[in-house]
Length: 296
Ligand SMILES: C[S@@+](CC[C@H](N)C(=O)[O-])C[C@H]1O[C@@H](n2cnc3c(N)ncnc32)[C@H](O)[C@@H]1O
Figure (tube, rainbow, N blue to C red):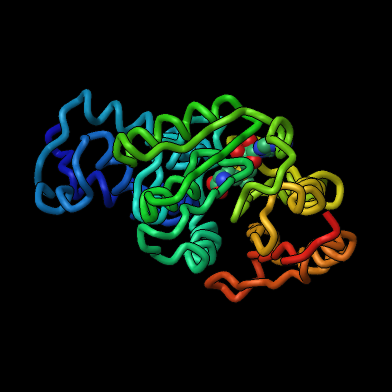
């Protein structure tokens, strides 16, 4: 058993993961081994010749089995890094994606530091999931007021936990469990509304990687027959909740520009949408402003 020193365990599991077509085999081995030994990845190198005892090896083997069974690393370890923080990611709550950092970067351009004389902005996130977006914003700009909802109670509990862990005691996200705008006072209160709603076509869910379709909550992914159902619900209602000149920022699929434009055209109080690209050059963020003077 003492043959199983850290460096050997990593090389063995790297090739085992590779032969089972697991993405990033070395990184996966390091994250899972670091997690099972409760040490940082750098420590795996500093302690490369440390032998694993039987209990440690047995525990690590169970994690390997779960990953071979296609369970995502973030559900095995229960956490995922996003933007500047680490988030709890329990089962039934969507794992935050690096792609979504593009949405956060775009929101930040609307939240430049303001001096204390400026009125705090009211920011609402619809479908907060783990809280990755809204907590990252509240962490950077504590002077504003933050509101978030989700239909899933698991998600609400997770945002609560993550905000306690990441934000200091004074900052708070006002949370409520509702469907999109239901139960929010129909009144133009918010400077900014954000959402990364489900936007995958129902028929495409079956074609997704096993990691996603077998483990992540379908309710966080399924955007209905055309993928645009949730985006539509949010866009057509947002002007009742945005202040004049306020902004809606949405994550969307790389091929949904036309669909989003068609929805926006049906909303007289909204200006034409603008689109921003992610790091891979795909249009992934829609920015939609409410007109300064509107019919309401
Ligand atoms: C794509 S996930 C985004 C989660 C998180 N904002 C993120 O970016 O990682 C979509 C979220 O919308 C929530 N959701 C789905 N339908 C909803 C509805 N009708 N009302 C509110 N939230 C909903 C899901 O539970 C899920 O947490």
